[in-house]
Image 1 (cartoon, rainbow, N blue to C red):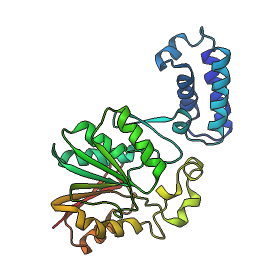
Image 2 (image 1 turned 120 degrees about the horizontal axis):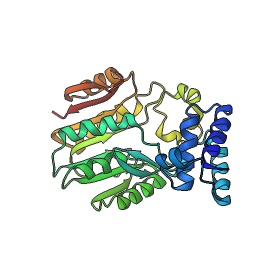
Image 3 (image 1 turned 135 degrees about the horizontal axis):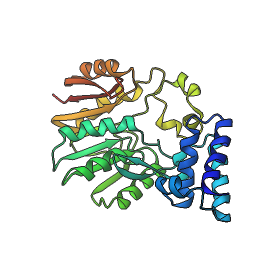
Image 4 (image 1 turned 180 degrees about the horizontal axis):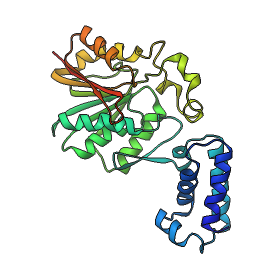
Length: 278
C-alpha cells in the first residue's frame, strides 16, 4: 500500500463510519504515523510504500478514529496558539474558541503580572500567556490531579519554568492575590451533555464539561470566590458558551464587578466576558 492508497483507504473507512472530516483526518493520521509532511504526501505519495509496521499502526489509528476517538487523543497532542500541547482523556482538548480568550488576555495583561488560571486542564491558557509575555508569575489550578500532571509536563516541554500548579476545588487551596484571573469553566448545561458529539461526550472528562442545570454554576461561584483573590482593578476573564455572555454579565454585575464587556468571537458568538474588580 503506497501513501496515496493509504489516504484513500482511510478516507473511505472514516466516511463510512460517519466521521465528518474524513479526508482530512485520514491524511493527518498518515502524517502522524509516517512522520511525513503534507507536501511529501502530495508529491511522492504514489511512489512511496508504507513499511509493514507503518501500515499496521495506520490501520489501528483509523480503527480508533472510526470509534470517534478524537484525532488529538490518537496523536497525543494538539496545536494551540502556535504551540504544541500534550493532551489525554483527563483534560478538555484545547479548541480554537479558547484561543480567542488568550488573545484578549494578551491585550490587557502587562509583562510582570501575577496571574491565576482556574480550571487549567492541559495548562494551555496559562502557558500560552506565559510564553508570549515576559516575567509572568503564573499559577494553574484544577480539581483533577492527572490534569495538573499533564499541565506540568506541558510547561516543561515548552521550557516554562515559572508555572506553579495546585490541586484545588476552585479557590479551596488558593492563597494570595493575583493581578488577573482567567478561567474556562465547565459551561455545558447538564441536560445537553447527552446531545454532544461522541468525540466530546465519550472521550472528554465530564467534570470539564458539565456546568450544572443552566450551565452557569461555576460562573456564580467564581464571581463570589474570586473577589478575595483579585487585586483592586484586576481583571477577571471568562470563556463562555455561545449564548451565555449576557447571563454571565448579569452575574458579574450583581457581584459588584465593573467595566463588564461581552466579546464576540470571529464567528459572531458570545465567547469572552471580562471585567474589573471595583
